[in-house]
Length: 124
Image (tube, rainbow, N blue to C red; front, top):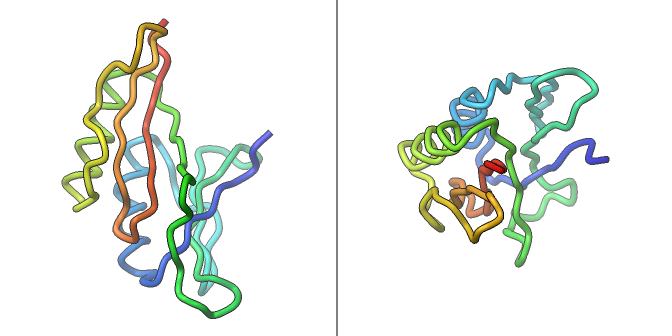
């Protein structure tokens, strides 16, 4: 259903280094790269995550209410990716842990450009 998700950046090298290190924790590798666009994925034809400089040349801004959810295979992976994000200077938006009683386990953070992300898994 989802092909790829883009988040804007005003500093491609900085954002690329952040996502290289972060998405490697989930097995992600650079899949496509252009001067103003880099995408990471696990397998060709599967959903990808990308950073992009806005096409209109205006500064990238954060969407209010927009969040990218990165799927993990276990609570341990969620913990590891969440910790890695904070080590990479992401801003904490909610520590990794269970949310509610339905087996949803997640950690929330903002990348270096202020884009909100979560890494999550279902434990039930």
